[in-house]
Structures are given as C-alpha cells and as structure tokens.
Image (cartoon, rainbow, N blue to C red; front, side, top):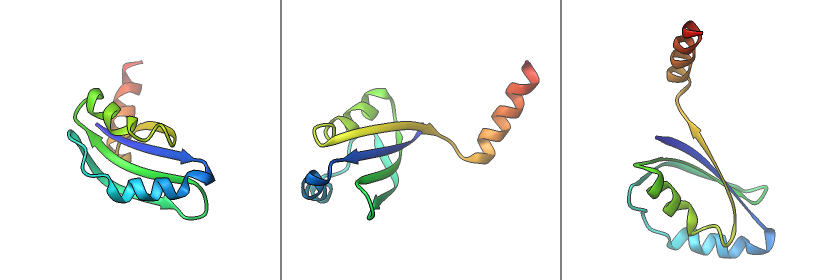
Length: 91
C-alpha cells in the first residue's frame, strides 16, 4: 500500500535529522517513491510503499526519538475516484 509520511521535528534537532537522513539506508519491505525536505520549516515528506504493517512500523520507529510522524494512506486520484464511484453505487 502507498503512504505519505509527514515527519515534523524541533528546530534544535535539525542537524541530527540531517545527519541521520544522510546515513540511513534502505529499509526492508519499504520502497521510497519520493522524499522532500521542507526547507522553510521543520518537516520531511516521504511517499513510500510498505509490504505490510510490520515493515511500515519499523521504517518509522527509528525516527520517533527525533519527532512525530503522521502516516496517511494515499492512492492515485484516478484510482480513488473509481473506487469512490463504485462505493457510491452500493449505498
């Protein structure tokens, strides 16, 4: 499944976040589709696929000592609209 993670951290942890981000390797069971650093604030946005909830959890857990991760399940708009249209016909 596809997820958007929004990781927020305190300004005083900026350097730690940068260092860890540069050192972190690829997490098992997780494929990063894109990642963006908010240069005007203290957030990182990551779009990724996770094989299951265990891999999702392990990929986020290692960052929770530095901030808060908001995880949002997402899908491409075209697919979502088709699913919503189908669901609307059932009600």
